[in-house]
Length: 119
Image 1 (spheres, rainbow, N blue to C red):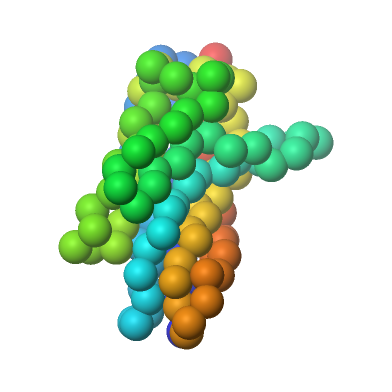
Image 2: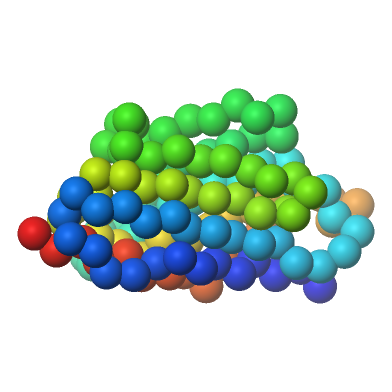
């Protein structure tokens, strides 16, 4: 059974930093891609950053230059380093993974971690 477990959320003041982590646990899988999404109250879930198997990354325009996504393949972990945080970054952040598991590509979500940025 595969699970995604996030950590690292919290409350910070504007201009602060947080690092989110997401560990993929289980066995007999390979990671195709991992992403971070966020959902603010009353808004749709949006893609924040993604890292593909080969290491290619992409970022939403709203976080470019402030966030860095990275992977540790040996630890099956993806990180999101967020700097210069703004109140509008307040949201629940979700880790998402596209895995090759039991012969098929499958999508998995973490439980979410709250990030609150105060002005």
